[in-house]
Length: 248
Image (cartoon, rainbow, N blue to C red; front, side):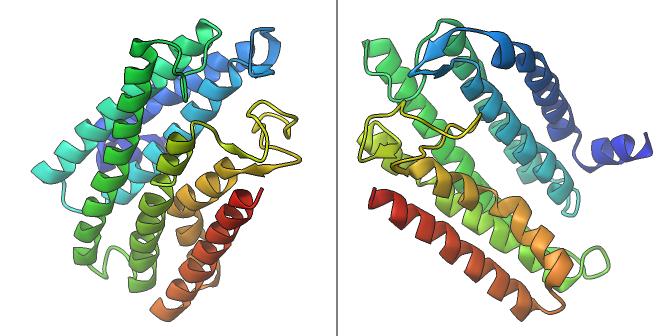
């Protein structure tokens, strides 16, 4: 259990919010498996569970990363700020699932239009604030973290911010599928389209550069140039999936 105490020491705010998201995700496993409520031909509870899992992965990751930098007022503000944004988004997505309604792209009423817009603003603020925070990582001492690993975190945060903004493309289209309506045949749970372009794939790959670039760097990089190469190849791959999705 010492690793739990270590995580709490790194960033207590994000620790508790991450823990709350973990508990919420566990509670949603049951309806995600057994509920017969459908939204666009998919179990309505898949979406909030996916967003909770993605959110808690981000939050746990940032709990660890921010533990390497000074816990000053800017880090505390960032931690509180993104926590509020994540809680807002996930509560709304879960609530709409419980009603059997779409949370994203829902234009059925002025209220759902407004809430969809607010979610877009929240996601943008998370991406921008994370990008801004990344510059604090340049000051990490080599004693705490090697230069290649420091750069892997920074580049991972930059790619996360870039591909998080891809959500604006989906928002402008009011759909994530290219070449067919949303809700067609998809792979299990993730529900990515089997037959058409799906912008969620690049969104997913790019945003999880936050974890994958440092992980790949830990395994394969010995110098900063190795990290830059890994991040570049990873970014090109994510961009390729985005372009292919746009092509349908």
